[in-house]
Length: 123
Image (cartoon, rainbow, N blue to C red; front, side, top):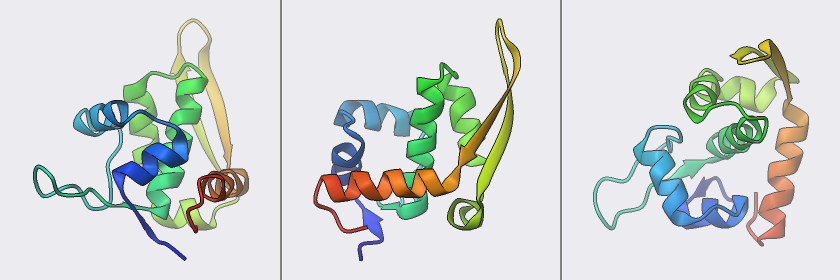
């Protein structure tokens, strides 16, 4: 079972263009467990990082701003990503006001594992 993933892996898993992922990393929206130590060196993502990316994309798909999405995802400790049944957030969005988001972690884990399998990566 693989527990670390490269930037190339993440792009394949989530069908993200490399330039987009790199920009998200540069802007601090996505933070790998082990950032690159310099040009030409790999950033390494953990399985909890993949769950955070999936949740980040889910927030973006729900029209939550990138900065807000990143702030929310960073608040989730690894143990909650791996053990919690659900994670809840109250998010202020115009013009709706406060919106409650409930993240079903079992679904997140299942979806990420499916994405891993879909691109032939053991997860």
